[in-house]
Length: 385
Image 1 (cartoon, rainbow, N blue to C red):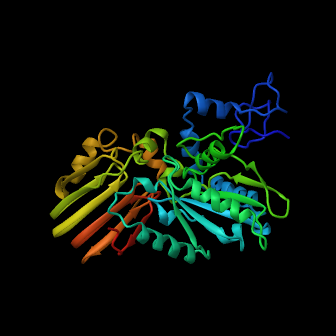
Image 2 (image 1 turned 60 degrees about the vertical axis):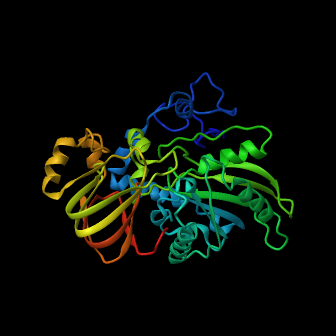
Image 3 (image 1 turned 45 degrees about the horizontal axis):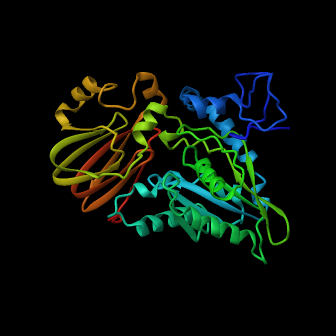
């Protein structure tokens, strides 16, 4: 049974609409990329509509979650190392629900990707403490948290050295190394870096900004452990994260939300009644005498500030034009209904918006946050800088 070397799907020649399709003239028993991977790699295939349609069907999402848990059910029965990759800008939604049922008692290392995007004044040790607490709350005893950048290859060599050392422990040698995480966090990109650095011949895994690129397990041989057993680095499909907009956003939206370069913090001095829109995804109404709001978000995300009394009119005039994403009514509906969060600030607070970034507030006042269902809002009160 041959699989696509790019996404892990079983190769087949009968149904072009299903994963793993290759033309009938191709050799399904040979190493090959399926048609979907070929189109992603060479023609920037946009398959975002499939993701949007998927997230709008609760039963199908439930089925996908069940398939995911079934696919990874043997991890807890192995002596293995688990690498959990999360987005450093989205730490509160990065832990897969019921992750303990997947990993069992195996050691878990957390790789916080995209950490190179943080401004230099942000204290990584504070972020690390938060990640460790979130992990503990989810039943994980995580001692190793690494800040990495798959894009700039930061810390990848360090992790690889420690991974290989873990395979060769005399008293508890690992058999395999699994890399897991939500969709679009960079798992396959990380593995491709490993392949480029350590493999003699390289068949690269298919990567994309969009969710659901990897469809099945992809095993890559990394040698033998201390007991002489063959060991593998195993890429897994992304967990379909209902708490982050990145799991289903179209490519046009992802290009705006996912920062490519160092984040330049935008700070606004606010007073009286003012409103700020983060695209059309989040609205923040401020009631205060004096307050500052610093936005750690992609430079491409449009931030619109106006008086609260003019906010509705501004939104109606600019939505789907300047106040984007979303870019149309169909996309807007896919992200769910609006929810309200009311916050009273007396000193400072951090507002984490899943898939978007962080807002740091200093001062005192009241904030009403209107957010779409797939943008999870988490509050914490620790200084980040």
